[in-house]
Amino acid sequence: MAPKPDSQTLTSSTTTVDPSSTSSIDPLFHILNFLPYSFLRPPRLRLKLPTFTLPSPMTVFSLVLLTYFMVVSGIVYDVIVEPPGIGSTQDPYTGSVKPVVFLPGRVNGQYIIEGLSSGFMFIVGGVGIILLDLALEKNRAKSVKVSYAAAGISSVVIAYVMSMLFVRIKIPGYLR
Image 1: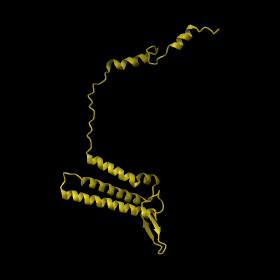
Image 2: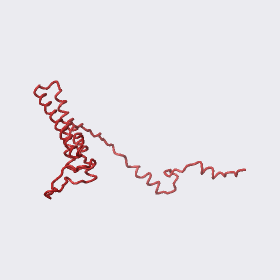
Image 3: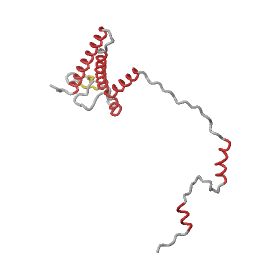
Image 4: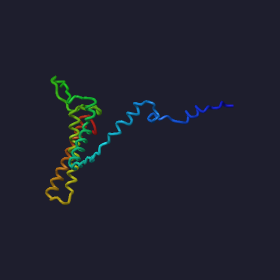
């Protein structure tokens, strides 16, 4: 047979003690609980929600294009690895030191100027595609359409040719 619990054990296990209840015997607790709130009232604030104006579409486009340039240029790589801005190599015949823009033979490494120039070529190609899209707009004059189309085609071709040249410098014997 289990022992019979006494009444004190039952009441202490079923009631929960609230530390903020008024059953405290500390008189300072009662004074600090009552005194400040008897004459202090919260202020009536007339706060307005801040209004935000949307940026112009050109601002958003510029920020997206700048972010794209930074990502494809390898800014994160440059910050983490801290490569030199430009390299150098010694000419075997004359012994003079020549600057090198591209880090040859290493696909996963770059100089800072190499990343920036490659990113710039990607931006030129992207702007060329945007110009080609603008050339298709119906409400433009024919001379403006032709100008946009010529600038767009030349930008895309220049970006492609230069990017392939960069790849061939970076990886000798690629696609040959």
